[in-house]
Image (cartoon, rainbow, N blue to C red; front, side, top):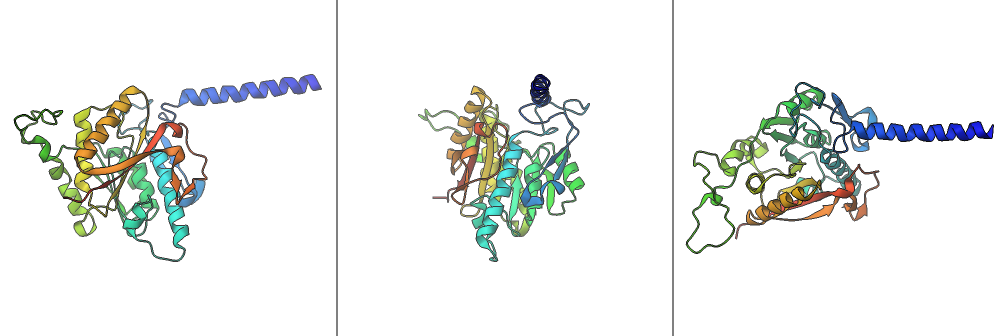
Length: 315
């Protein structure tokens, strides 16, 4: 009996290891990029009985395009967790009070008056979470928005609106260098007919309620291994969307090697010159109202940063 029990335990342990190895092999970047359908659930959204559902064109699909918006990326889950946790804490602190959308955005929370924009949305998870949390209006944007549009429609989110948005560099970066300027060049031969960041966001801003800047801008896995000019385009587009003392931006970044840190450096350098200020916090160390989050976290959260940014008032 004892030998049979011992063998059973060993076989069970081997099965557990095999299951975990199979699960790891099935995942790419720690997330499932193969299945046709995915789900995100959180108690703030009603738990597992009321998930945000997503369709993706995974790596086994003929429509799969590597490195693009056709599949889920891991930071999207961490961003969704943060929005839900922050909103739950904000509501608990308010009690029966009425929240202020600008104040809520400063702590990552969503209210019934919140206007949100997601950049580089991919499947649109971050924006859909904001919509499900009850935001007034969510603009979900990507240079290839078909996947997000499909998912928003499938989830029946009338307060979420999908549109195409390509990141562009600010007009001031095209100004000629002055004689004797030895600083690292931000100038290139970009044709004048290429839209500026200000041009790129004009119609989007006009479509938002009251034609004003959003309270919160979100993005996940939009900094990975791009070059300097791509980060300038991202930052300048973000900055063109932000209003001082109103907008707070959150970007979730994951360390996937040395090239990612170079990209993050380009991001911060561009942000400083564009008038954005902020700080990074490891996702596993993020606090909500001074308290550590109680959730189980996500795979590789220890290698992710939550970047929080606001825009300085013009001098």
